[in-house]
Amino acid sequence: MFSRNDVSIWSILKKCIGMELSKIAMPVILNEPLSFLQRLTEYMEHTYLIHQANTTTDSMERMKCVAAFAVSAVASQWERTGKPFNPLLGETYELIREDLGFRWMSEQVSHHPPVSAFHAEGLQEDFLFHGSIYPKLKFWGKSVEAEPKGIISLELPKYNEAYTWTNPTCCVHNIIVGQLWIEQYGNVEVINHKTGERCSLIFKPCGLFGKELHKVEGYILDKSKKKLCAIYGKWTECLYTVDADTFDAHKKSDKKNSEEKKSNMQVQYDTSVDEEPEEMPLPDGDTVQVIPGSELIWRIAPRPDNSAEFYAFSTFAMQLNELEEGMKGVLPPTDCRLRPDIRHMEKGDIDSASAEKKRVEEKQRLSRKNRSKSTEEWKTRWFHQGTNPHNKAQDWLYSNSYWDRNYSLLPDIY
Image 1: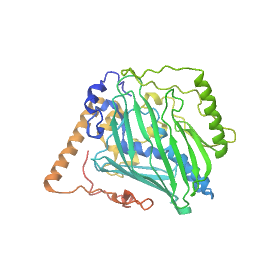
Image 2: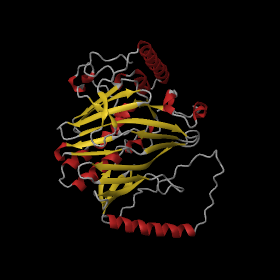
Image 3: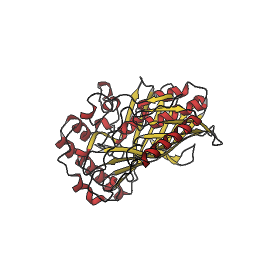
Image 4: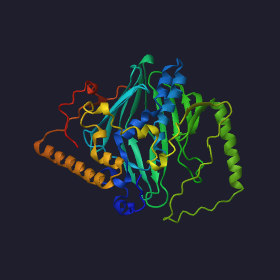
């Protein structure tokens, strides 16, 4: 990583309070050497949870695995304060992982607003995972909030089931001063469209003393909204499931204890100081208190020891931009691995990265200008707009022909 200490982020951002950030050119030093299309691929790090769902005939057990997959998909955001590169219109990314049993492809299908569409399939034709994400970024003075609009669908053909959900909001604090830290919050509802079961999860905001930081909790409900079991944990660590009554009793006694503590401790809290950084609450060791009778459903894969020096990447993330010998001549010319600014940044050449980023962005602007003169419409290559078959929302659907490897008519975007 480069040190960001000598960059005045404030001088860039003070013009943008309350604005949409996707239209503002950010200096490359704030980036991490991956495209947003590659960052999205990190949803697949814990694919074993999908395979696990496929092995059980009980729909509630499957829902536990799918809910854990939905939480694990955002776990790689933890401590990832670098901004991924905005994909260029028409940029693509593919990943085949035989060891994890999937292949993935994605395309930047729109530039304003920025929309990334993706489609993954199990190599045994045992699942489909697809969606489109429009990361809406807002700057609030001390923090940047990313609301990932869009729908995510998972299909398990063996059970003729489809699940859909949306992701929580992600917030990076202390953009201007202090140490950057990340929280995710909001409600995530995973729906099984065949059985009517749903898993309602709350990603909790950190709260006044950070007691709630990174916490996720909720219930799996049947179609008549009866609680079948509870799920709890932290999106940065692990998830457990336990009987709903046991969970509710535990929460009750927990609340009682903390209220007693509060009344013994009168706290002064001064909100008038505005220049202070929003301190990151300190975690208390292994921080998920395990309720007796719980079952572990997911634990995060540990990051490599040197992760902090490498943009807080997981091992999975470190592998995403690798250009292997056998890929040359097979990949389409639009694949992120061939994008020069990201490659320069990965190699540690910040000046070339910055110059190339300016050049490819300018090239994109120019071709948009030329299109508008000639009334020529941009055509997406691998996705088309349509209706999501499961929840009837507008979505980007995969057009099926990417893996035929016919890339002769692709645009020259780099």
